[in-house]
Amino acid sequence: MREFVVPKTDTKILGKVELEYAFRLVAHYDPPQDSRTPRGTFRYQDIVSGEVTGERINATVYPDSGGQYDTVRADHVRDVDAHFMLKADNGEWLYMEHVGYRRTDGYYRAIAYIETDLKGAYEWMNNTTFVVTAKESADQRDVVFHYYIAN
Amino acid sequence: MSANHQGPSIEEESISRRSFLGGATTAGAVALSGLTLAPQSRAAPDAEHGGDAAPTTWFEGPDPAIPRIGLRWVFSATVFFADRVMINTMDSPAGRGYTSVGGGEIWGPRLQGRVLPHSGADYYKTTFSTYYMFQASDGALIFIHNRGTMRRFGAPYERGKPLLPPPAPPAKQDTVWTRFRATPVFTAPLGPHDWMNRTVFVANSQRQANPDHTVFSYYEVL
Image (cartoon, rainbow over all chains, first blue to last red; front, side, top):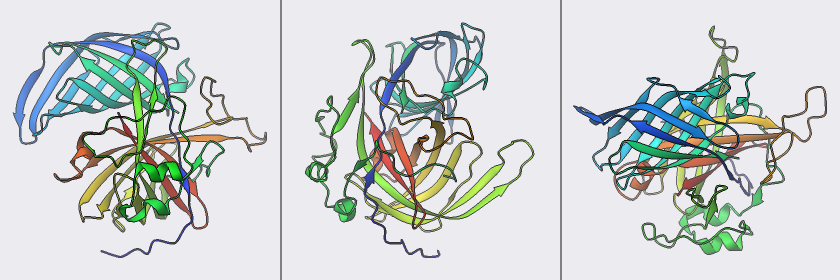
């Protein structure tokens, strides 16, 4: 390994991050299907439908557009990896990705990334980081996600 | 991590980095450093982590039924990048960028150490995606995969005010504010750093000059 001499600097900054509430998603899932894999238990759950509501967007989860593809770890935390499409009430499409954790108490923390039309009404969501909190229902069939913009 | 985000803006607050080197770090040190807290800040119970944490700032939705989210500064990384290369790939107008990591240091209440020298790079394409290694002061190797977004606005974010687009060229660009947010996923060994395997983080990133380096301020999402 090559060494690296860290130059002396007098940087004295602590950058801020401020959250701003954006919208909610109520997502409805089929029952999970678990498989044993070399990486642990792979847990697939189809996202059947969902409704996005908020002051800045109203949309639905496009049916059969994706799902949640989690890995259940040795510590029983799930690595969350979800991909699906939204169709806004003005007809525009949005690609949604979740990366994060579902803890053993049923609570999620995740980051969401959205990609949408550069010329569309939701263009402000491109290159925006969303911080997500969520809670799963007892039967794991409904999850309410809340999205905050990381400003 | 590339080229065009700006240095510290007026919103940024001052803190003594030196006071967090070497692990002598307490919430009291944060207070002494002049870090001011937002009005809704409050101390959070910190049973899991002992008393060595910075205060939490809580953010709420428009309706009290909406769960709030807390952010708590956990550590910062000063990273010195080395080579900067752009590959003109065919499928993207932006191409694939490569910016290698030289080294750096990690400082703050919850993690101290260094960036493992020459341990990876940012392989960005429009958004960035950086892979390299931290080495904690106890020797633990921690993998960081850092994704991020960057977007420019006409002025820094102020709570309750909409963010407006930057002025179109050739208008004056003096007030342009770049919101540069990084979202790392860490893989840490079992032991004292295991909390990083189940914690979501969001970071602010600021590029600095003389010498060229980038300071990432990492917040734990509570």
